[in-house]
Image 1 (tube, rainbow, N blue to C red):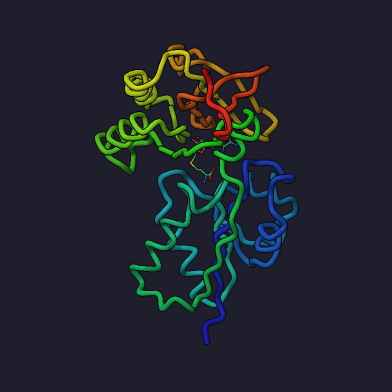
Image 2: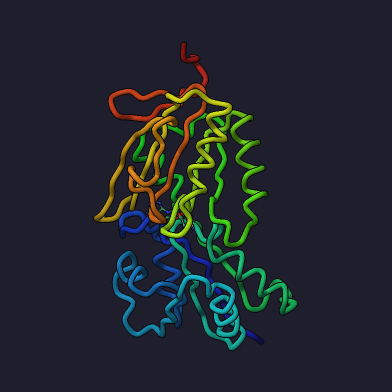
Length: 252
Ligand code: SAH
């Protein structure tokens, strides 16, 4: 009988305090780790004695295949993602590889340990922006065609969804955030609050507020370590906090 096990572990935003006890237990239970090693050490502390397979960006399928091989060999392996592994994380590549290998659903055992995703960390630092219906959109067009992302932005803007933007901007991808701003300005006023959270719960943490009209990624330092939250038509700022009312009252 194959006794291998694969954990999909969300590490949370990046500090030990927001790593769940279940995530720490899964890492402790594992023989081998797949993920960014320095990051695992930073949040999970002592990982000495574990074989660890570092991961480079763009190698997700290869790393997922390696982890699945380890689990099929009878060992216990943890595949880690920042935030939650099931939100723009390693769960996708792992289940893709399992599908390709016609995994029988039982062996190796697969267990997902949820983590605190960037949208929760960002919201906690900003105030209460996610108090009405919201959605998450990744602006990375490496795996999704930009036309499809554009359509989703248009639908979310028209639907008055509070919108959390993951992967908003990198050194090479600078136009997407500016295009998103233009789409939202067609549906929302230029004073709509926007929250910008960089490196949530890490030593470099920076939180700032802007408005939709002034959403300039370059000037505001938006990069790949940043999550951007665009308010809806009810969102307001009070004493530096971004507030979307629950619906008991309506602004204006
Ligand atoms: N699985 C992760 C998301 C990975 S996609 C999760 O659930 O949070 C990578 C994007 O997540 C980054 O570009 C950024 O937009 C966001 N992100 C991840 N960690 C973050 C943090 N500590 N602070 C701010 N944004 C973060």
